[in-house]
Amino acid sequence: MKKITTVNFLIVSLAASMIATTGCSTTKRGDGLSDDEILDVNDIPMTGERFDTLYQREEGVSFQPVYFGYDNYQIPVGEQAKIDAAVEFLRNNSGMVIVIEGHCDDRGTNEYNMSLGEYRAQSIRAYITNAGISANRIQTASFGEERPAVAGSGETAWSKNRRGEFVAYRAH
Amino acid sequence: MSQVKLGLESEKSEKIMNKKNLTKILMFALVASALPCFAQSAHIRITGEASGKNTLSTSGLQSDGSANSATFIGVLRSDLNRSGYFSIVDVGGAGVSLIGSVYGAGGISASVEVRKINGTGFRWAKNGGVDDVRILAHELSDTIVQNITGKPGMASAPIILVGKRGNGSDIYICDADGARLRSITSDGSTSMSPSWLPDRSGFLYTSFKTGVSEIYKVTFGPPAKRERFAAYPGLNNGGVVSPDGMRAALVLSLTGNVELYVKNMRSGKLTRLTRTKRSNESSPNWSPNGSEIAYVSDASGAPHVWLMDQHSKQGKRLVYGPSESVAPDWGPDGRIAFCGREGGRYGIYIVTPKSSVRPILVSPSDGADYEDPSWAPDARHIIATRTFYGKRKLVILDTQGDSPVDLFPSAAAGDWYLADWAK
Image (tube, rainbow over all chains, first blue to last red; front, top):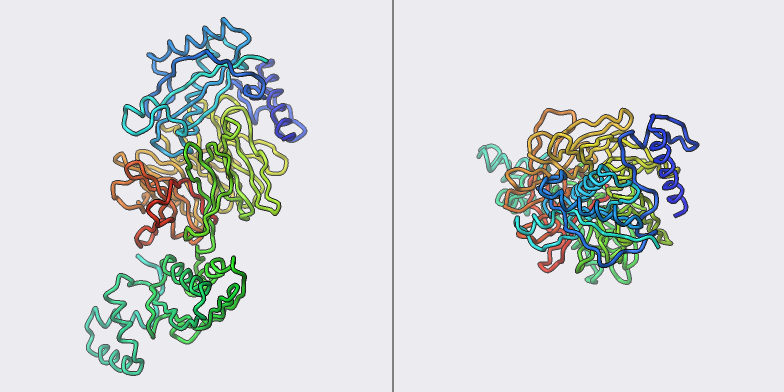
């Protein structure tokens, strides 16, 4: 547990230094890990501690799910307004942060869908940061095909399961 | 098709019956009169589907009639049959005869001579407690397979798998024949992606027990231990330890992209292997010598199996043909099994890296989907998840043509998937 915290801290500090300098320094660290081994200039690094351990879940706030095409993590144009609503919420509530959950339909392997779900969540996260919200207020969590919104198979169920959901948290 | 060495008598009998060579029929008659049971055994060989297999008889095994000895002999026969290399014939004149005694009072005590028809053979003798009955039967089966065919067996290699219970899923382990199924975790949340540590001392798996994905390392001990292995922000999945036990490949998203990483088991140092802002990586799996990683990337537009040389950190697409290829599993002989999508169905294929041979389908075309393959240590069998009308089960496929076998034969056996066979 302690070791993991240290590694997380290291990544936060790496991320911070990358954001601060933008230039691609390659300072060697004591453990042999250099900045450029983990981060690229265009990355949007995650914060080091998980929101669910730092913040309290905000009940009574709900957002519409963002739906995706089959095996796709690009945000359909028709779904953008739903993310705009989340952007607006974050702008108006500076004490709030959100976790974006990525989900998939049950076609394809569980492993692949874990990555696909995460990519969907990351696509939404990138959209929100592009809209000017600080990256450290948005985290992601993938559930792959493990938590379907609608049971069963067939496009009616599948289209409701390929989704990104927003969960709001408030600082303690 | 089969690479099995035929026993002396079976070669002879096939030629006799197929070519109707008069001289050889005469010889056959002579041999048959010298060995009273031989004609019978030849007849069984020809009419059965066992051609290309060694005939094997266990009728020379004396038992004390105890439950343990019956279990031992039953498991041994089943294992030898499942190995794919033997046809159990229980008459005289078999290519391989097992002769000896099996006593089962309070445990198991077996002394077996394994005799080939040419007179050569070896002796195997072991004792054990009640809990060792099946373990020792598996061990003897693998010893016979190794000795007769020169190839490793699969009977002693355990399988780790995921079982669904209500809304949760947990990790289980069973023997190669599906017996001795036991529950390992009882988190009651979602568990997935179990993968053996190379020395079988434990495994890595992904758990959602804290609410998000984290990778845990479990060692059996005693005492059994579970430690958090990867809990970075975002995705933590696909953890699999290298054959030398020094590193683990895993999939993380801490940079804001899903990427492939290697984590040093001792120092915890992370090395990033992919930099693909616009593509998605999953399912890493090590080559037998640990120099390469097979993984899935959708950089070409659809998910496909790629290979990554760890030192150059250059990914190269391996599989062309099926419209999708996912879930690679590198076998002990260097061939890679994967799940391919063709005509809307998922099937299990095998491909040899650095060869121009197209991937070969090894799962039945029976309208079901076959996913998530894992090789047995014999480099011949593959366990995979079969899904038919929403009902999942685990089946063992034979890449040399024997029919698939259910891991759990009982009809109401539950919902099992994502198996990893210890290599």
